[in-house]
Image (cartoon, rainbow, N blue to C red; front, side, top):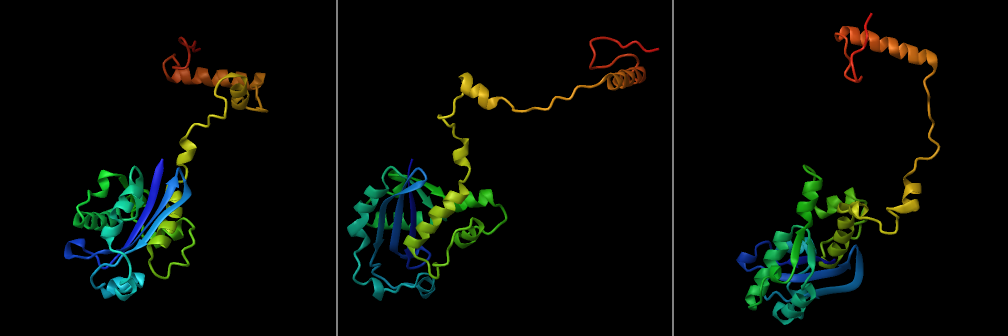
Length: 234
């Protein structure tokens, strides 16, 4: 399956209030491996960036003044995403911003060209009651996030890819290994237990067992459920 890990950085928190995307990063996967293809772009938001947002990602409006507008790259983005499953942490946030940008340039929402998997929802299902931020998941799954002093879309997609591997670890083991024989001598040999120790009861143990059966049958009114018929009780 073709998947794309995606992240954005923005001027603020609410696209409904006119906030814009200033960075987007996409890493393409085939199965569980990066293909080497990626899309990473910065945009001129044509507006100020909230101070709180700058504290998160470190970018100012002046840093982005010479960057292209989203409208110039909208079709490139849709082409890259087409037919893929997107892996996004807290997907509703990023999807809302992307769709707001697409609507400004009369383009369809991204759900019309791809599907979306929210890795935050996945993490909450697997780790109920725990912190499931990207940093918390990096710590939980042993992903080195020491470079993440500020948020950045490209770095965050790289970290999210490694976290997603941890979240989905073990799923591959559910697949059938077609290289292993399931019929014939090979399958019989692989399924046959080796060096089993067989313990056989001796005469004394058999006698004690028979006496116990008689005692149980006597207490049960002359019948044991594990026998074919009544047990003679003296």
